[in-house]
Length: 476
Image (cartoon, rainbow, N blue to C red):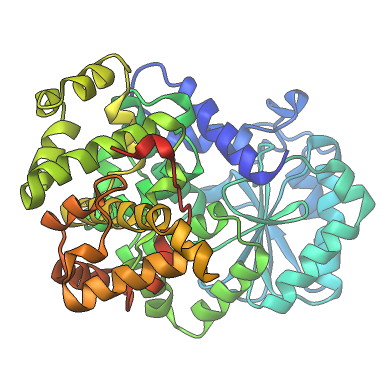
C-alpha cells in the first residue's frame, strides 16, 4: 500500500472509530504510536527502573546502562524524573535539530539499539537520544545537529539486515526514508501537534456528518489551511478544543504545519532536508510566508470533488450567480446554509436537488472551508472556469478551421473582453456564460487576478483551471 492510501485509511479508521463525538489529542497520540505495533508487543514493558524490582537479566534499561557504562563517546542513564525513557547522550544537541524515529519490535530492540548506538559512538556523532518503555512507532528517537549525521544514521539502519527485520510500519504523518521517520519540533512535540490537528479535524468532520470518503488527505489539508487562516494563538485554540498538551508558539506551530503539509502533499525526504537548511539558516519567515501567507490552494476546489453531484452543486451556484448578479454571493450563501427555497424560481432545478439527497455540509467541508473573502473567490473561480470552458466549446469549430486550439481562441477572446469590456467576446450560446458578467465584469476580473497573484487570464488558466472540465450536461 502506498503512503497516500495509508494516510487516507488511517484517517478513516479514526473517523469510524469515533463513538462519543469528540476526540482529544491524547486519544490520537496513543492510537498513532501503537497502531502498527505487533500484537505480541503491545503490552511489553522494557524496564521497571524507578518503578519496581529490577530483573537484571530482562530489564533492558539496566542492560543498556551496564553495557555502555565504560564505553567512550556515550553516556547512558535513566533519570528518576524521566523514568519512562532510557537516555543515550554524546555531547550537546541544539533545539533546532534533526529528529529521527526508528520503530523496532520487542525481539529486535535490544540488539538493534546496541548496533545503532555503537555506530554513533564509533563515529563520535553528537546526539541526544532516548528509548521509551513501550514498543511504539517512536520507541527509538535520535536527535542530531547536522544533515550529514542524519543521513549517515538513516543509511546505516536501512542497510543493516537485522535492524530492518525488526522494523514495523512507521508514522505515515511524517517524512520517511526506508524504515526511519524524520521530523522537527523545536521545543515542543511534532507528534503532539499532528495528533491535535487530527483530533480537531475528525471532530469537525463528525459534527457535519461527513461521508467517510470525504475524510481524506485533501480535506485534511484544507482543514489545516482554514485553521491557520481563521485563528490566532493556535495552541490555546487546540488546547481548548482537544486538550493539546505540549505548548508552542505560533511560529513553531506554523513550522511544524509546513512539514505536515509537505508530507501530506507527497513530497520526498529532500523537502525535509531543505526545510531544515532554512531552519539552520534562520530563514523561519521564508518557510512560513512561502507556505501560508499567499496560499491559494483552495482555488483548486475541483481536486476535492468526489462525483457528479459535486458538479451539480457547482451548476446551482452558477445558476444563482447568473440570475442575481453581484447579489448572487448572498443567495449562494443562503443556499449553502440550507435555504433551498432559493431554487424555487426554477422548479425543475429545485425538484432535482431535493430528490438528490445531496449532503451540502459534506460538500462545503471539502470546498468552502476558508474565510468569507476566500469563499467569494471560490465562486469567482467557478465563474471564471465556466466562462473559459464554455468559450472553448463555443470556438471549437472556428479553431479547427484556423488550425489553432479552442483554448487559444477562447483565451484570446476573454483577454480582449478584459482589456476592452466588449461583452460579445464572451459566449452566450454555451452555458449562458455571458450572464455571469453581471456578477463579475472585466474590472472585477482584473481585481480578482490581482488578489490571487496572476497577471492575466492565460496565467489563471494555467494555474487554476487545471481540471478543464467541459461537460455537455452543464449547458443550460
